Image (cartoon, rainbow, N blue to C red):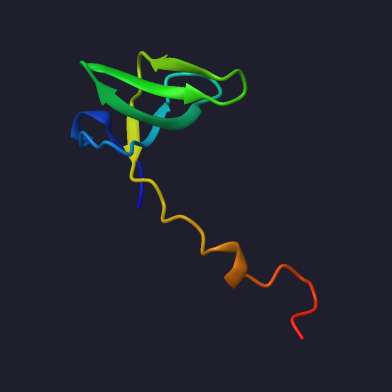
Length: 77
């Protein structure tokens, strides 16, 4: 799916990908709308963060298959 205007974003409990395309180097993260504010979590420092001006959104992709079902390059025999 391509990026959509933030005005069309759904209010989802599990979050969506958001992007602030107004910056010279656009930032992308996972956020959700709570109390009228876009909020995410900065895993690098372990704190909640705000997205004051997201301009676009996309749904989150499906998670990867369970690791046990992936061939990680080891011997399966």
